[in-house]
Amino acid sequence: MKVIITENYEDMSRKASEIIIDLLKNKPKCVLGLATGTTPIGLYKNLIKAYNDGEVSFKEVTTANLDEYVGLQKDHDQSYDYFMHHNLFNYVDIKEENLNIPDGSKQDLQKECARYSEFLMANRQDLQVLGIGSNGHIGFNEPGTPFDSATHVVNLTESTIKDNSRLFNDISEVPTKAVTMGIGEIMKSKTVLILASGANKAQAVYDTVKKQPNENCPASVLQNHPDCILIADKEAAKLL
Ligand code: GLP
Image 1 (cartoon, rainbow, N blue to C red):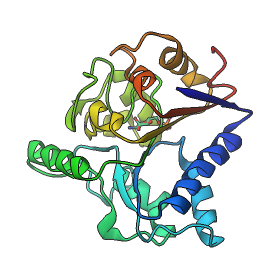
Image 2: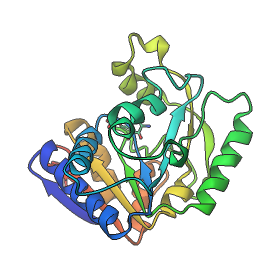
Image 3: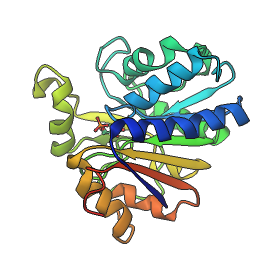
Image 4: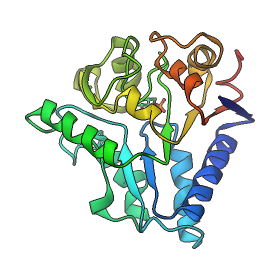
């Protein structure tokens, strides 16, 4: 794993966007794995700017998002579909038919998981963006998830529900389940770019980089990936 430590959030976002801008220039028809959360918002802002400056186009890009809450309709302002449209997709020339996010509003979630896995099998990500949960989760793969997992439904842990409750009016509104890309499917991406910002991620970053890969810290699996770049700001990297 290549570890890059930056001065602050802005530098982390800039470095991350440089890597993706390079990919878009070298391979305009790429499969881009995307993540939600507060962490990649700066990266997406930079990508929108690069698009507005005429540096890159998303016309031929296919996306593959990591996860989605179960039970939120797409137009709910905390759904990940809504997040992606409002933080990136609505502002670039990406085609709606090339966007892929697991659909957590489906009645038959097992069928939806199988459909998403099949899509990923046929569309290997060139690069997968990841954030990290304060408990080391990636996507919504919580501690204990097998490293070879495919897309599945998860029960969110108390700590994840609590972390994410800051974005809802009340903790009781946070969904307790989600559909997530599996760890095995994240690992199949040619490149993985994981971002971490802030002191509340410091322990998870330490466990990811320094501990033997183990299921208690899902992100530690990335040590086994042949091309993984972790970009952490100073606060997130303070235990390294
Ligand atoms: C959620 C998402 C993850 C994300 C994590 C951290 O649980 N499912 O993909 O990495 O939150 O979010 P943040 O970047 O807001 O700290």
